[in-house]
Length: 503
Image (cartoon, rainbow, N blue to C red):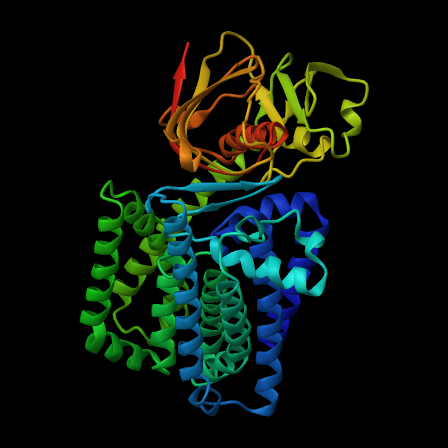
């Protein structure tokens, strides 16, 4: 019965997440811990996938299940996971080789009004299967508000997305047999916790086949956890298995971390992997120890470990709250200036109709208004119809003297409307391009933004970055995308190399 209750709970959460702005906002910082990203699409998949798996566990319990479900499904599962990860890393290597891009950096790819970003431990070229599938079935327009990988359609061979699609569908299908087989090998008192571990781990693997790749921290943790669960059926076997295989886990982990250090000698990737990997291992470790707590004989050690994990988990939740929720609950002072970047191709929020236009050009306007009373940032986003996790239009401009901010990076122009490009720079920002390789239309660029129009760029301050700071950064990125698009640059890659400020 517990599995039926879990299925109903996840389904109810899915519905609330989709229809309630407040529930979506306040639950996202917790749910995103399990999907490892701010994309709502990942959360929708997790909740739908969990609903199906828990309901399946409820049905299989009545019909009877056992190891027979894992005997034939285990090997093809491993095959399709390996196949999908080869396609993922293969598409990424093909991408960076085609454009001679550094492996360790973030690469923002803009095509038309769409964009995506690639990073060695968080690959997005493998998401192209979403667009290809939508294109084949005729619903690609339904995916236009999400990153479906369409910006890579002209560079990634069709072989890769079709292999990815085949792998994902196969892994999802096989998981429907593997999860009951794993869960029902355990005693009744342990099955609830083991089922949660299975749902989270299988979800991470499916997600990373599409969005992450073989060096994503959530994939590495999930594949290790599933390997243990598929080879054991009680706490004693887990303990014995880890005693036998700890050297394998150690040297595999050491090899992967060493490879990331070779890829990025600045240790940025290895730090990113260890920091986020510790969080996911803490979550899974806490769930597992709570599941088998009655089988642990050393009571003092049990409560010390559980307390330590609970404290670390509490600290993680607190830090995520301060990053994703707290900035939006701050009240803005009277007189705070709000800028709304409107690109003349969408619906204008009712709050701005007849409002003051601070800047106007052929392709966009900046609407401006000052707050007449104190207002919460979240309420501002709500009244302007903006998603707090996907902002592209709202900028908060504080009163008083402000610093100007800039971005230094590498640009590669891929598609131009004219052979000779003339960039007519607007007077609200400054753009300097230095030729790196003119034949490849590659430039080093320096972009400075007028603080009278653009928000503060906290990435230049060397402090903790919140979701509100990320939103402000993407206001600038999205503006650059629209600026180049109207100038005739229909596709380009931006590799940020640094952020700076000046008076």
